[in-house]
Amino acid sequence: MGFSALVASALCTFLLPLLLFLAAVKLWDLYCVSSRDPSCPLPLPPGTMGLPFFGETLQLVLQRRKFLQMKRRKYGFIYKTHLFGRPTVRVMGAENVRHILLGEHRLVSVQWPASVRTILGSGCLSNLHNGQHKHRKKHYVPVIQEEVSACLARWLRAAGPCLLVYPEVKRLMFRIAMRILLGFQPRQASPDGEQQLVEAFEEMIRNLFSLPIDVPFSGLYRGLRARNIIHAKIEENIRAKMARKEPEGGYKDALQLLMEHTQGNGEQLNMQELKESATELLFGGHETTASAATSLIAFLGLHHEVLQKVRKELQVKGLLCSSNQEKQLDMEVLEQLKYTGCVIKETLRLSPPVPGGFRIALKTLELNGYQIPKGWNVIYSICDTHDVADLFTNKEEFNPDRFMSPSPEDSSRFSFIPFGGGLRSCVGKEFAKVLLKIFTVELARSCDWQLLNGPPTMKTGPIVYPVDNLPTKFIGFSGQI
Image 1 (cartoon, rainbow, N blue to C red):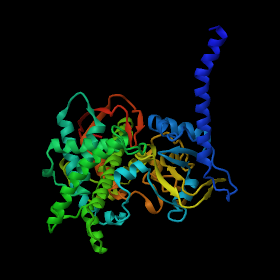
Image 2 (image 1 turned 30 degrees about the vertical axis):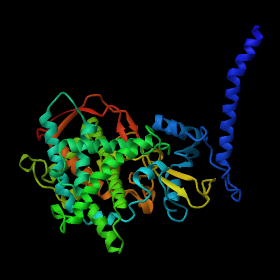
Image 3 (image 1 turned 90 degrees about the horizontal axis):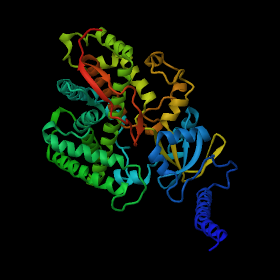
Image 4 (image 1 turned 90 degrees about the vertical axis):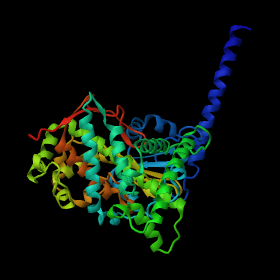
């Protein structure tokens, strides 16, 4: 065969598949945008739809924040993409997010990706309102303080060269969530049994956002197997609750409230729905608070002057002197700790645990000169909205004082949305606020620490966490400011 024939053969071998691939991508793009509403004169947002069927899910899963930042730089505050099996528009910026969140039940409704609905269940926690948490916060305080104090004491007793903060905090937050949200008592789980539950939960979370393909060894398959382990333990706990007349511990946990709410509406208790609701409660009350608490340790470790201001506030309230180290906290004292609350807000501004929220367009809607067709998914971005908010100056700086002066409610309402917003803000936010404040108080008055690797690199998967698990050296706080 001559040289020219070899070249021609090589071109056919490589060029034909490439042309077929490019044609498939083009046809996929045309197929995805074919659902554009012709009755609306506005164009679709800019963006790309990725690979056939997979869309841009793989890039998002592998690159996360880097992928999202690249998209924002290229396309701005509104762009189209294809994620988790659905055409999607991603939205950021206070005004755009305001339009989406205030359109709840009229323009959009909550709809998580298919993989999330399959693993967690198709229901939602609309039956459990923040008001129920608000009226019972006082019951949470002693339980949270007991668990946090015991955990920090273990960290200080360990006194090794370093402690990996993120796994330790996840275990702490899991214990708290199991006790307060689901009513598990400390004696109900051995350390090994608790660790098995923690590992199952982490496996489930890792695979929540995956392609909706349930075949052996796929992400969805692994997530469902882990969920079944959790459901078995939760069902055991639910049946124990049904057999008891009075709740243990002297207060009603969130699961008990959910059961009573269902019965109060004359509905039959459905075991599968209860297990799904309990699992979602754990997701909202464990992973997100673990992320936020880890970020708190990182920011306070990097900004000792902020930690000292927290301690001065505690000192003024009589919470820092050695004779009061074991002083029991209550809601009245916690609500007076304004600067500590600002530290938590600033942590959530710079490192919100959940990067965004999911909605579906109930009808074709118009947003900032573009159309979002009926049936398309809408993701509003929390992290990007914080990044671009005009409300904040020196946005990269960790400065809790920015929250000491209240901003006009209307301007700040959608510029700072760590718990989402609108009618469907995070159901566990009242629980999270109390937990994080108690954690900060106990940490500041009992520990000093050093981040061994310096400022951490954060990753999203799907909750924000430090890549190195935040190795840290803890020592006891001397009591001197």
